[in-house]
Image (cartoon, rainbow, N blue to C red; front, side, top):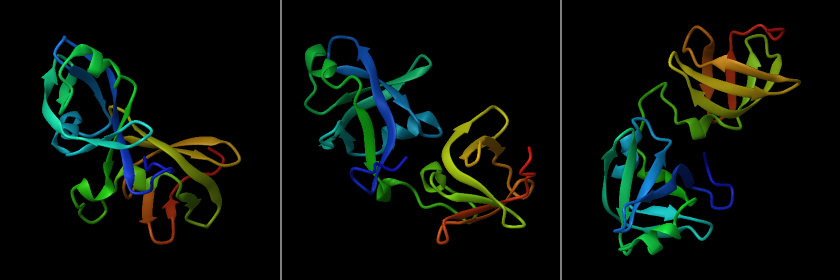
Length: 169
């Protein structure tokens, strides 16, 4: 999701805990696959968006751990817990046609094929079956991101998604 306080920075995860005593931290990743977060350099951390280089990172159990440059002990690592991890938008790979980053979809208006407004995309999340758009308008709707079946058009320039969806559902 794009950081409104600093446009161009996207939140891609957060530091969720400590790992060991040598400055390593646990990382919660919002990237897909989750270890993609370890390929981005530098990370911009916390409210001040201070750039930090990644000294090392690896999968650990069901999660990820990392050590940031200049973070040599548990006390230094503890100061980072809870920090959101941001990167610049231009650090992301270019996408092909009909591919979108979730951050690009948030805030777009959603309308049916006959131009009936359903609301705006508040967030996007993944399920085992497909991604889901959470659309808020007169009420909250969860629309499956199924290209051609539900999602008919995404126009980033117009800020609009057109869907084949019954507004009463």
